Length: 525
Image (tube, one colour):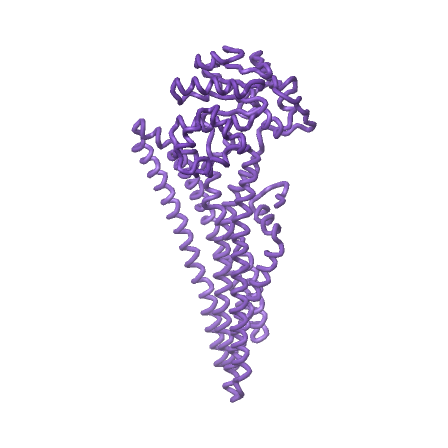
């Protein structure tokens, strides 16, 4: 889907509708065809009443009524099929667009957006956008049906037709006055929902730590308070929605009463026939349906706009690191890293252990050209003499890999986590993690949940280390890779990695003497 250059909620929804123009047009056409038989039906009923008064045969009017009923059933079924397709298209396209964009943002996402914002899009906003797209065909059908009935009524009685054509739109406009408060309250509820989603994500990710320090009760209290705020915001939305629902019945009802009363007076005076009066009454009752459709669609569209605004906020985010205009290719083989800010040089093809204390993570991110530190850095790290910002990000990320000891795991089989899979065995051996795989019922085909909660912290750290080693990167930066394992395991890991990575550039940020003992160079800064 091509997004407009200046992204707004309305343009975003329009881009989704245009992405499958055939489906959108079909939904509109079938929406019209589904409502037209109902619009013509009051006139057919009036003709049947007239036929009774004249003593004429009812075969023709009844046949027409039956045909209209069959046509309406067929077209309504087809319309429901296309409108549901519009819902699926709107929801799926939004989710896919946001997922692709967040993947492009990479590490830039966390610094610019809250977890709750992205979670709320997938959990609720895509459904609201789907509802907004779903209503397009019904709105078009309601508008055409209204015009058909209005024109037919004008031909029978200009006065009653004018009342219908003017009164119903005025009723819809009066209902529209209630939309702005509803939109405001809906947006407030959306903000509260984002907050509670973010809080829930924080609680789940830190549940073990919370239990360890006895913080469950405090966070549970915070979550209950946030949930109550969402409930109260939902009550405000429901209050505004109830006013909309009441106005939806009241306003067209008043128009129907007026038309029926005036029609009865005209029938008594002989201006219109009884059949025409029946047609007017049935038509005015039918006109309540387009009004109900308009208000329902207005509700869905307002909710879709609120959700689309949040989606646009995420889609407007840009990577903190820009792709170079003229990328410079890196030389083949192991790479050298030089940090002008500290004067530190990592020699190509060596295992270098850096003891940087609390500055280790910031230094590692700078050497790996990650956005949080590089965005504020005046001097770019040189990768084998090439400034990091002159290298294409795809090449840099494949050649210089930064593995943090708290890197996340995605749900799926363990085998899928290792790229390429054929290097998994050697990587697991070097990370001393083969025993973990042997202890699982399905081995490498074992399903592991998000963040790898099925295994202990030490096991997860070894598996994460193996995953990084399997990449066989020319330059590998490891941040405290053995902080959660015992001394004997750490000794085996240090020796095996030194052997596996011989001839490649490996940087280990650690204060452990076991790493120092196998290092080619040790730097303290």
